[in-house]
Amino acid sequence: MPAIFYAVGVGPGDPELITLKALRILRECDVIGVPADSPSASHAYRILLEAAPELASKPLLLLPTPMTRDSAVLEQSYTDNAARVVSTLTQDSSVAAITIGDPSVYAAIHTLLVKIRALGYTTQMIPGIPSFCAAACTLQESLGTRNEAIHILPGSYPVEESLGLSGTKVILKSAESYPRIRRLLDENNLQSRLVIRCGCPEEKIYTDIKDFPDRTEYLSLIIAR
Amino acid sequence: MPAIFYAVGVGPGDPELITLKALRILRECDVIGVPADSPSASHAYRILLEAAPELASKPLLLLPTPMTRDSAVLEQSYTDNAARVVSTLTQDSSVAAITIGDPSVYAAIHTLLVKIRALGYTTQMIPGIPSFCAAACTLQESLGTRNEAIHILPGSYPVEESLGLSGTKVILKSAESYPRIRRLLDENNLQSRLVIRCGCPEEKIYTDIKDFPDRTEYLSLIIAR
Image (cartoon, rainbow over all chains, first blue to last red; front, side, top):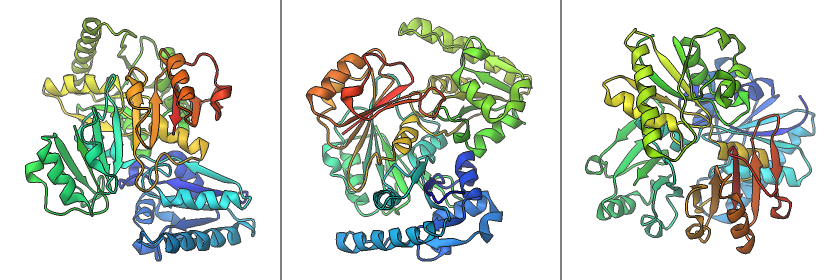
């Protein structure tokens, strides 16, 4: 396989939600890039091994991104990861780096891909099911019909401005700002659902804001109307 | 397989973008529901047969939705389709109806599923890659990073209100309103991309609004910032 860097989405949690293309690329590549400082710490790698246990023997390249908002630290980690990937690509080996969900939706792997492309290497992005589609399907709800808008908002977004928008509001990765967002949703009388770790064995679903827990975690999302 | 109605997303066009789960359900089901008045008229069925040619021999149930905004005509077609599905389910046969993209994103199949569920039958939704994730991946662009919002807007939405929103605007199914939307994007100096039939052999990509064609078609989307 030529020395290409692939950013591959493995979907939100259910190993069966990986695509044929993602699985083919991960089977054909020389090295799997794992976005963590150890394989066991990677949710994406766990999903992949459940979908394709035979890939456990494939060489790994660890590509950790620290959980920080310090932009200098983040920037340094991307530079270090790009160097690691390039060092593999220059040995004529392809690297397929995995990410949960889809690589175009709030994925650190995209920043890494841009750096690698800027260094002159060939890159490709392979889509994955985003968490909000999987959650809506689990709830058997439509995110939008006819002329309704769908607004995807990260938890760090100033949601006050957005809760008044017409259509469906999906709030992702809301762990830190969750208590404030929950209060705002309640005050605005929005019909809200909370889905935690969609498609994983530990999945939790709350369809009424009155039952929402006091805290949530990183891999959770809210669908509000 | 028990008499369940499945609404299955087959992704936007590239047959490799179907998920393992969608393919398993479509292989295991008794009847495949095709959203058209003939198999050859269905883009979703074409995608499926490219992914799994052996499914060509499986029984089909045609579930056409007329291309109209006449709500009485549409409502009658959903009622007729629900009756067709229920007639199959009562013979203890499962029906897996296919749709392009994801069944929670502007999909007629969701309206049908709601009707079938209301009649007391078991239903499930199986996610598919939405067109906007596939298009962003083809362009190797991110739809949103950090605290940026992503707004998904159908072409029939009054986009004037939304072009001023911060973040990424994705405009779907813009065929009819496209000339007006193109003019608005140009007047607002938004960086815009047009992707037609993403992942299909006839895919076309325009990365500069100056090169956009005068007309587009139903299966096209615009990503604007």
